[in-house]
Image 1 (cartoon, rainbow, N blue to C red):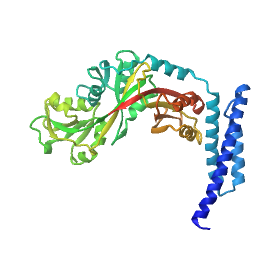
Image 2: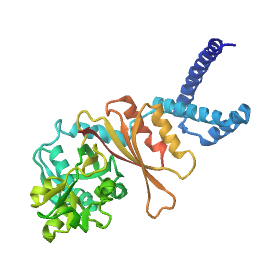
Image 3: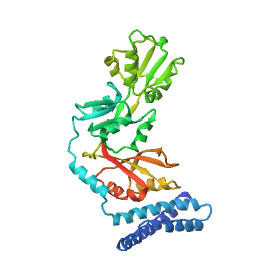
Image 4: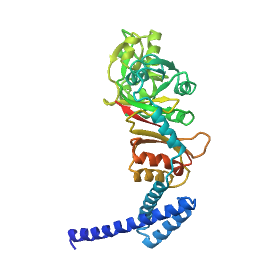
Length: 380
């Protein structure tokens, strides 16, 4: 047979598959109604395992794994459809709706905001992009920013979460496990690192270079031009600039923002020293209370999944079934819990969509523990 004839056969089979699939889903709907009436669980793992084993044996050795994958997805579709028919709004979803109603229609122009570092830090620059006239309190480390929000010292906090060159800020992800907060907005800041020195310093004289570890990672190629210089990580790029200024030495330098040049009376010896020209850091703006502003089209959640094969696949498959795009997935080990991980998801979905509602009502069934971190808009 030629290709056209083979494709005709596939089309005929597909027509039959569609008919059988819709028939199966109709029966699944009847099963859902029966389970709801008799207060039975939708998910019956023992039955699914038995079916997977049976269809794999029927398919034969060559097609067994393909068949398992096909039926695993079919089960996800069926469970999602049944759950949709039986869905009752959860406490979480009701809390989200109340927060949407209680949140002002406009994002605040001014507020007391917690930032890590000192004057001139990139967090400050991001803060001034998010808020028109913020009042900023500076804290030594990321943990203190989270604590300032929890204790009510500041209404909002600004934290870096990932960089386009150096990747995720793992310390922030680790702290997310232990703190209570909500993400209300995110911002992507263009990062330009500069080599700042005390006036009169020559490049050949530099023996020490100070900066934050993320900035150091983002300027790896440039730093190779200083093979004899000691690279010293500090809490913040602005702290690095302040350290150089306070020292008065003409053999040290800082990799920091251009803002710090004027702020600390330094000289820019070389500009834009980062490895990538389009170097951006994503900052999150957090609050103690859940605030959801109009137009929010991104959602962040954290999950703890059971340590067994297929646990993450089931979550991703359900999101795929609902048509929800996963734009970020980060895993971090949970302290004091052997081989258990926290999974962080950024999802692209409108808070007003039916898919968002369904996911928020299904999260309990998808994992051992989960935490809703908020829905928000990302500004650039």
